[in-house]
Amino acid sequence: MLRQVAEGVLIHESEFCQSNAIVVQGRAGVLLIDPGVRDDEMAALANDLRELGQPVVAGFSTHPHWDHLLWHAGLGAAPRYGTARCAAAVRDELSDAGWTARIAEWIPPDIAEQISWDLFGLITGLPAETARIPWDGPQIQIIEHQAHAPGHAALLIEERGVLVAGDMLSDVLIPMLDLDGTADPIEDYLAALRLLEGVADDADVLVPGHGSTGGAGQVHARIDQDRAYMHALRDARVLSDPRLGPSAYGKDFLPGVHARQLQGLARRSERDGTPASLASGRGATGGRSMNLPVRGSLHHVELWVPDLPRAREQWGWLLGELGYQQFQDWEHGRSWRLGGTYIVVERSPALTASHHDRLRPGMNHLAFHAGSQASVDALTTAGPAHGWALLFPDRHPHAGGKDHYAAYLANTDGFEVELAAAET
Ligand SMILES: [Zn+2]
Ligand SMILES: [Zn+2]
Image (tube, protein in one colour):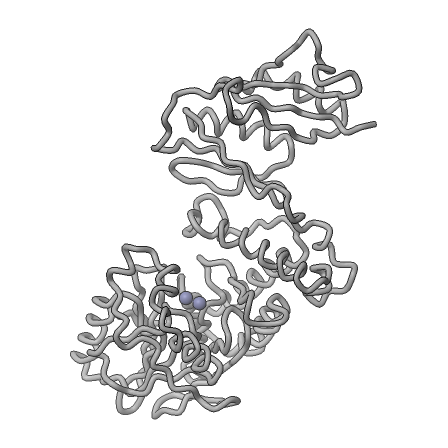
């Protein structure tokens, strides 16, 4: 179960979120970095190390998030280090009596059952500015920064050419900001990427906190990928990040994380009373302030549909024509996003009727800004081939009033949309 990634450096990948525990061989035993998540996995790791005759002589947690702070009695009682800021953050967390309940909110129930909190978070803070982990083994440089979590440390195992990145540079997870911990989370993240770039050429192997290890070429590639994500977030540009793709590892939860990061940044800039572009240190020319969701605008609309393949095709066509991009896709649904709003179609197992009746109480229709009169006409003409038929043809295009140019369409399942032309 332990896999060697460089001389004297082994990893164990947990079933939870592809978490990597890292074992570094020293002279009298091993250093264990981010030991793991499931109790049985850590027990097995303790067993393997015992069989190898390698006691754990030190531990290290890259940052103060629950999945990096667990421990197992079988691993022994060696000191477990973190940066001073990391240790302080954990102390804060644990000083509140409700900590287990609060942390539990973050943990999927099936994983929560397999976790032991007995030795959780017993971290010894290394004095600020400590350059290397104090232990009897290969030199390990501590690269501290404020991206992702307070006192986050990446580690460079210098003689082995291994960069332990903590929760950055993952091929499966998008960068996750520490939205409450710092004054400028995006700039802090970019600064951390610059620090990692400074040691990138010394690393032949990259081990992220979650995801696959990478070779020398991957270090720069993943730095670039994380930076591109940050720039897109900062500038509210459309992202084409493979980690957010429809078949990506995190397809069920990362789009939500991404949306929350966008909202969190929007809320911060509102709270600070500054345009988001200023809050991220970009100056007034940054585009994000114009593109942030307006408070009170629609976050999403969820439509329950009787036939998901049909809804995917019909809504997918219409929303695609209107400029939406596919956002989420899962067994029971799909969504498309435009700006700060997304629209979901879902065939829920809890659905209680087989068709939608727009004349009954509830939603009658959804209306979209559809651009020019010519583009309304084009959608009206193309609609029937995609399941959207024109309503009120005798009064089209003024069924909504003589000064209002719009097309009213209904699809196979009885959902009505109004495509409103811009006032001219
Ligand atoms: Zn984390
Ligand atoms: Zn993590």
